Amino acid sequence: MVTGPRQSLVSWAMAPNTKSGPGRAQRKGRSEGRTTKSAKSAQAAAGGVGRYTPAEQSGRYTRPIPTKIRRSASWFGPSILFLMIFGVLTILLNYLTVLPGSVSIWYLVVGLVVIFVAFMMATRYR
Image (tube, rainbow, N blue to C red; front, side, top):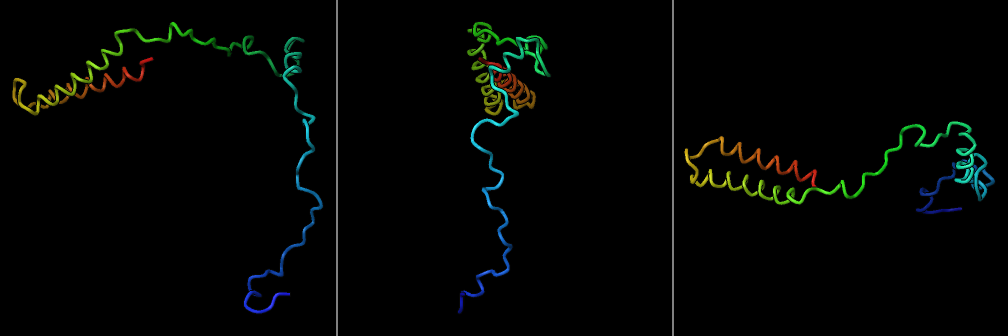
């Protein structure tokens, strides 16, 4: 029994432990409802017993795109860089009053649109 200043830290009203085992732990190994890969392939070969149907038969299979097709053209990267530099230079030269027509909001709009197009192209670059 605890006495003194530590007595308030002990809880005497705890519920008794009614479990005799480790809870809901399962026995080691596979559960009865699980099937192995070989069983699934045997089901597919036997005509698709149950709900399993191969992806090729159901039409949900999409073949991977070949690497040759996924590559961008050789001119795509340099054109992205050119558009970025052109957009920044348009905005910069507008504020330095080098472009004709003094400072104009249309130079700013053109520069921002060109930079936006370059960013959109960069998301498609492979």
